[in-house]
Length: 377
Image 1 (cartoon, rainbow, N blue to C red):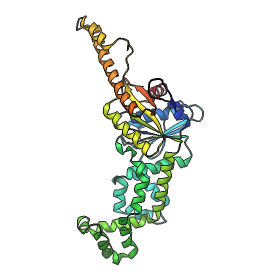
Image 2: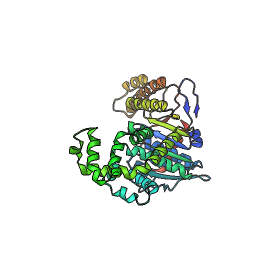
Image 3: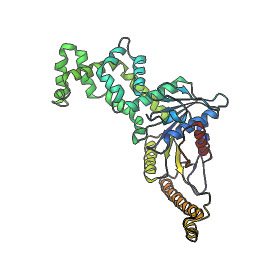
Image 4: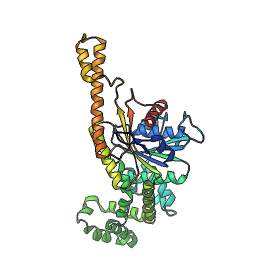
């Protein structure tokens, strides 16, 4: 996946990744161009003959806008204007957390249980906004897409925060939750029958805190107990699917791409992602450094440029260009030093640079340009 470049970090071979990977996961902090990178990778793969889908977990609408789609939801939608070769194609979709949870219930709940679950107030809250649900549903949707067998490549655009890798914890969190004492207590009243409800709940929850029933109320506890009981037959499936997707992410056919900009905070976050992926033994393809500034006249040093500008009329166009060149060269050198720090800390991580674009990327032509830059490095 990497070509070694003398005196620098290994070179990330993006086209090799797109030709061989089955899943590409883009992760990084906010504002580094991660969504654009994911879209550009997906477009390039499709136009090189691969049946590709790009899934964004980021609720922002940038992916839809850049691909000319008026809407983006839980259903893969074909992107028009893609110049495909062979059997290539490109679909795009955005994770709908609640809809994905609903699909799981519809598919795996016992007959007659699905509507009972949908009507439960606790399910309605859990499926829409409960902490951790988004990450677990991302795992579910990725597993569903892979199981379809429709696509050669799935590109995943993760949320723009450190929680972008929280889905790696989904199997462990699910197992801890399902095997926990709280779930056993909540299941007890439903199994014991309605009349025994208050007694069992009171006894069970006193183990945790004597104040909980006063804080959230008996009716809420009853909703929660009934919800857990309705889902009980699905618990094994939740755990198994989460573990299967986790194992899929560790497969050599998966490639994680960390995205950053040549700035201190962004590269610090990139280091976190690289180290976390190493801890989880996930297959890291490399680092994409976006918005890198280069000078076409690097031979003219900043010092010489400023000295020449001093000899000219300060208001002249030439003096202004010389000062601008000096500023850009200084910025380029600062960015290079920051990248060198990252490379020193992670010498084996392959890197590819993408030049700063003159404006926002908002269409397929812009994405093609980014993709070509990614491949050229």
